[in-house]
Length: 182
Image 1 (tube, rainbow, N blue to C red):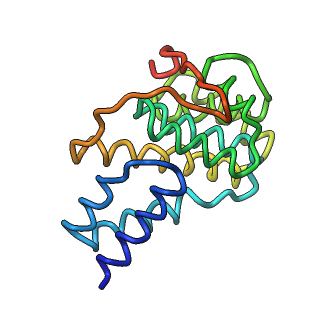
Image 2: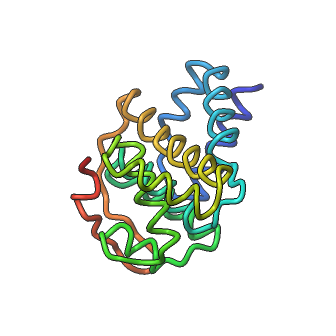
């Protein structure tokens, strides 16, 4: 019964985001308990926005997926950002390495620095903390951390083989390859 419900939930996720979640079905078949732990971790950390500005929080999620992925998970992170109200132009600018909205850029740059352990991390952390406070720093950090979990799990199960362009609205966005570098 539990497996059937988890598969149904995953099929809904696949339809909603036009995404191949076969690795999530595989996890459900192998261990519903593992699926539930994964879902709890994602919801407990990655869905909490705290006081974070929308664009900064969404940008951190996109950056987290980008660190680990070359397309499908970045697409979902981008789709979720659009769903949350983030303008597609900002997402396209972030992914192509162009300057954009200051809040989004700060969230994106911070998430990349955090996950790559970059030398700029301290400066970016201090900027977020002084601009928005500790709750926002925590929310953006949790968003960045958990958004990388989907591509890591896909890779762990042997499903991270597909690269694709990211589509925002009606336009394909060429992701700047330098953004994946540390």
